[in-house]
Image 1 (spheres, rainbow, N blue to C red):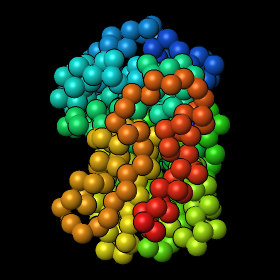
Image 2 (image 1 turned 180 degrees about the vertical axis):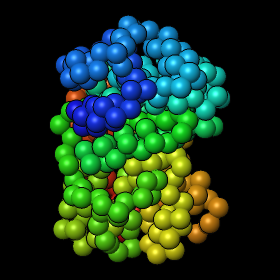
Image 3 (image 1 turned 135 degrees about the vertical axis):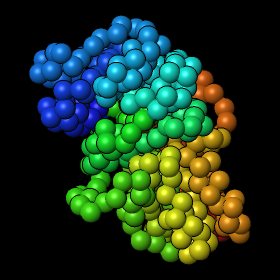
Length: 305
């Protein structure tokens, strides 16, 4: 996803010289094409994410559109005060980009596991939150971040993400995307865990369970109308996220459903614990019960208790 982000941002920066990219002293292999082509639109702030965010706020309030770039929790949790007070409060045109949402950097330990970021960013007024699920969504969300006034948070996977969608021509930003029709059960996903949900559906189909699948590139504002329509049509809604189930994407869906009543909801994600185990993203998804097999088993139990 990071390569797609950089390529998309380069197209934007070519047309708009007020677009600035600031990095927290990393990502140079991916960012090299940008700084070579746009040296006057690129800044390395060093390993100083709070300063990076402060720079971005000041430049944005001077008329620039600024993208900050770092990994895991560093562009969000480390500098939450600057995001809240300097960026969001002033509706500053700062676009915060996290590479490595969830367990992407699993082998580096819990300090690099971004599993509370959506909850924190979603709680801030004036912040738009995006979590693309594939390369097509990553390109679309990068463009949306540029065109959306005010502070945005763009949560990306790392490299190697698949392109699941084809052409999304006619897609309206801030809407959920229906990927697959289904019966009785609807699975909602946000972010790169999308691929696990797709595999889980293949497992469930062999058991005679045929869920529908929707992906939500935009977590805030969330597509409440689609959630309400699904609540009327399906017996069970399942949210899947590579994030704490408290306050994240599942929480956003639950808030909409709570106002309706009557719809059964199953939230799958990190069960309000710190991910203290070290391992690959695939291993950690298995360990914390959010890989395709675990997703399928949870849904089977909910459908056939």
